[in-house]
Length: 182
Image (cartoon, rainbow, N blue to C red; front, top):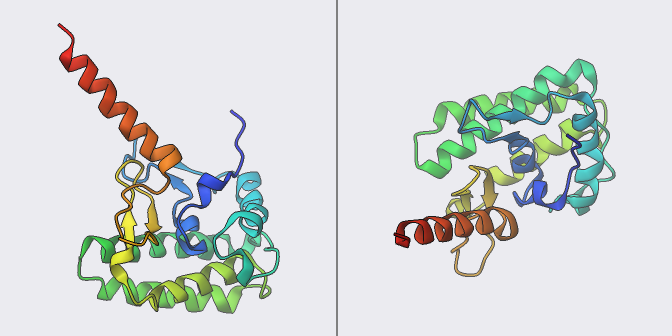
């Protein structure tokens, strides 16, 4: 199956969240898929993020992750997900925050340049830590992705109405029709 990084894949509202969301269906281990497991997809992410990320104006075109920094980058992705998912769910995140700060520091130290994906992701995570309104971060009710709700009344439920919202509404409609038929 051919895979492309599309605008839907960058609906998190911050590069750090888009990186965390690179694991598809994280909450369903049997169906989960890591888009960074394939080097071409991982390398393509840097170019796509330069064009599609909500924070694209904050950095130059991004360079892909160096092979020697891959382990640290993937650890950064997982700690971003762990911390912000826990914070969104209202859990005690002190340990997760300490882990995140340690991995951010390591990623920044090992990043080969300012325009590397590792460096930009670490900086994006730091910006999110300073986000004043923690209640703006949400978890999509359909796919489980993390996203920032920047709507005026903070009522967004899905990461992307055109994809997850439509799927959820179509599913509800199908079950309503199915239950109503004799």
